[in-house]
Image (cartoon, rainbow, N blue to C red; front, side, top):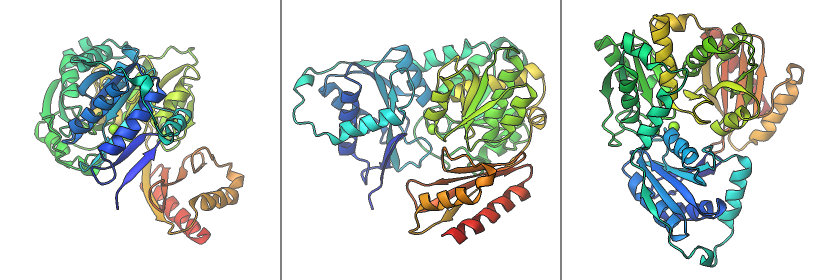
Length: 454
Ligand code: MG
């Protein structure tokens, strides 16, 4: 069956079996009309189908009068930053992020460099559904300019951050193994780390779209990187996903810190440097580790929670002074740079922390609050996920569950979060506790409860 998934994060599908040049054309016209023409930034990851789809996007945009700025292959955060810096009306990134190689997708960026929010996405859908009879208002073909230095500008911006100290890092000269899965971070991340003063060992940094392992940067997919860190006696390993917004950290023993701790480490660095009375909060999504709340509490700070998805975190970060934000999947957002998950920013903060403390990655990690997360799913067949979640919320009313994104029940030292999948007949369940046995038990207990509700 052809696979095409359209949602707030963009439109993705299996190449030429759901996601094809026709789909790309229709979405691109809708987006170009929605933003009212003008300058639009385009980028792609390294997937072999990337250039073909990028060419479609660019031609279509030009045909409706938009001026295209082509950043070529670069990380998603680089493209977001360029939309902001060039004051473009929007951006389209051709990337299926962590999805396998047979997938591709369009991610839409609004003016200012943030992804589309629910309102903007609804507007895009309205344009998509409105047939275009004539394009007469758009009968002037737009320009195409190539932006060759997008990655360099991005690197310079991250190096200039107050929380990133290249002088300090240079003195310690940490040895870092980088696994960029031959994706869009293959030049940007090692280039940044070299400029920061690290000794960089490149692994899967060939920039050719050869996804040598499953692209999601989770521990199960990073065993080669772990081995290489041990072999090279490196100080740490860093891995990104194919569009380099997410970052995973491996310690000096080749042990993964799991993606949840990328944000916790970056937040630790930001908290150590924050002015006491600045009143700034931290922002993350409902599924991110509680370690962040415990750590923030040590510094007298609060964590605000949002529905899952970068745009929800970014929008919340605009509402009050925020120290740092991000998502537990390895996405660090530092407002001084831009409001998007950025693996270069994450790496800059973590390497500066390492240099500043003089400790090893493991020693630093051991000082952080520790939790274990268990992720599972429950098949619900033809049952109505919404109804099951509503029944569950009713049954646990006394625990005042959070209903902003599925159902989340939080106790002082553990939580459980249920979300319905948009694409499969399943409910995802995440649980976290001080130890794995307790988290697993929590999942098992609630699975039994949900099965009864079916
Ligand atoms: Mg990604």
